[in-house]
Image 1: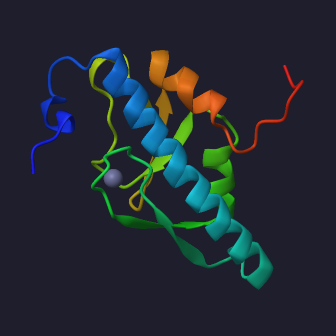
Image 2: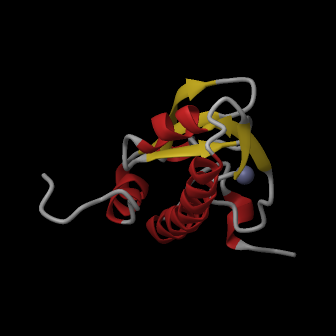
Length: 128
Ligand SMILES: [Zn+2]
């Protein structure tokens, strides 16, 4: 199945970057619900299954992180939790800021970072 997402290796146009960031933000919202379920269970030492937030529309990879690890990835509106190797860092879109065996944390930059921040589920109005 052909998609615009297959040509990522060289240059990515602004619209594609925006689309990727929108996808990432959707997965991030799904993970927020997973975390809330984990908090209700109260088992903080366990790892929970979170969906990869890499932004590829076809990605269905599940990674495991503790609630504390997830919280650390959520402390910045530009951070995303991805399966190792799924980080999209080409063309200045992002950089890995934290790496574990089970996941990586990617900081989005440029237009992707701006979209990510605008969609931050933790964002409160008037907080600048
Ligand atoms: Zn992925």
